[in-house]
Amino acid sequence: MKRVTGIGGIFFQARDPVALRAWYAKHLGLELQEWGGVAFTWADGAGNATKGTTVWSIGPRSEETFAPSAAPFMVNYRVEDLAALLAALREEGCDVLEETHDSELGQFGWVMDPEGNKVELWQPPAGR
Image 1 (cartoon, one colour):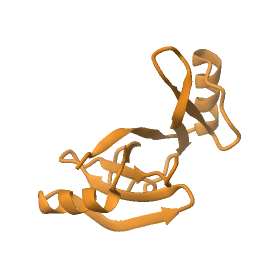
Image 2: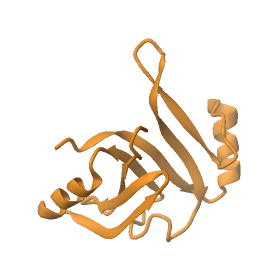
Image 3: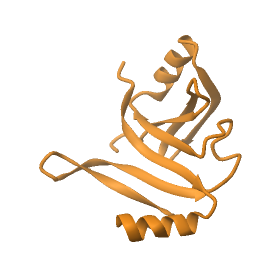
């Protein structure tokens, strides 16, 4: 079974997300969208767009957002078969959170790494 196939997104929290977004826009040239982040389109070695994006987003600091992790960030990894991967992780003794989420954006599940960081696993909808 293939496990992680790419990075779907990087999410982190800030004391002042508006100011921090502005800093990234000004100094690193990120073209922020209205929802507060950027969706980077993937490209092949020649620079041609391919199917897929990686999201980068800053949100307000909240103890609940990435709970039970205390880290101010979370990485979202793309996976091909979320249910099979969560089952394998449980079988391997990993701390898999019981909650999963299905939406028009795909299926989501979470596991805690050994350092207590919440890791998001995302199976995109078919064809995305």
